[in-house]
Length: 451
Image (cartoon, rainbow, N blue to C red; front, side, top):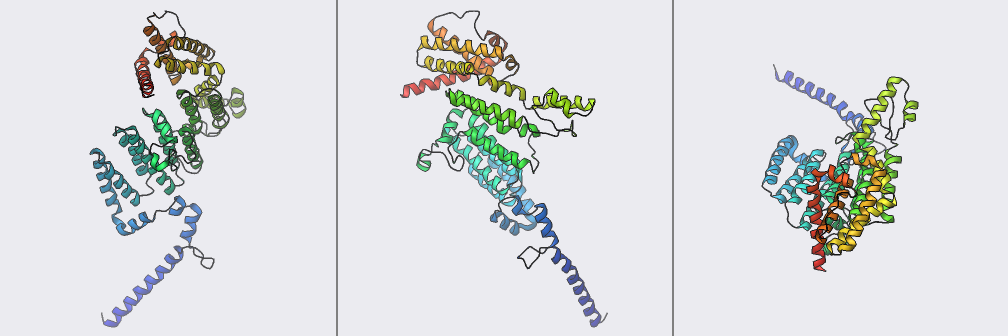
């Protein structure tokens, strides 16, 4: 082969390469100004929202890191995951958090990183500290970390739901809930927050359950466009209304009674029955017919077109009501809205306070009246007794309180008293209830000593 033939062949190869580049350039042309129409791939990214900017806020550090590592990103992430697990096991929390930050720079849209790390910080790391203030700090760190993930993954419903769980469940139902709920509105870092809330988590100074409800609502809005991967869909979408129930119950535990608590239960009932209860779901059991939690027998008969469809629809409504504990919460809210039930909660709480202050005569009168009102309401709403719930715990607490008062007064309990049926049927739960009551009374006595 002579030199001329070799040169011609190289020119032909070059021309062929240029010819192949032309459609690639046209297909990948970015959308510039009005004079530069976007290429096919850019148009498809915009149409189907496949670009990174369509997912959420772009982190420039993650983009730069990916450019530097190119094809080695997977190896780097695997190494960092291994390191983070090591730091977790050795309780090196600072290194664990910095390593997780490095992982999310490499994989900002890998949802598991955000869920795992935020849970670790809020639930596991916080539990390793002795001071309640330090524990609250790490709960906040978990919630704040997750908020960054929500910004970067603005369409993902799972992360918004997880944020609601940290703020609602972890702050409101942990062993330290009595303190965490106060800290959420009045942060213990008075130098930084001047006695108010941390604005990153609670800008308006609301109750933690109301803030959690806002996050659950955001999760529901996102779930309409992107599938969630946490719970059954009916259960997932019930959480905004469930937060109202938690809020109303928490007010009672905090000793807040009267109109505020009654309105909270009323709002919970209305949200549960008219919003969530009327939402239409298309479930696999009856994909051709929409069902809702509040469907009556007449609704089912009108909706179904055949006898078999009616049977399947009736069973689906019953099954999904059980998944969400729908009938119980509806009945519970009806019961709690009544003044007699509000009186029962108030009297039992005030009896505990009077007992801790050694006002035994007053405490006995209050708890006996509270037990009587409680028993009357449970007789009116007997279905509530079918469920293992905090309401039964309140009833057991009342009986325990009554027994404590009689023992201290040197009196013998009678064989027949209100709530005896519950006491006899719930013996297995009594040790846990008693431990919580004793802990509460101890805290009350310490508070009295400080005064």
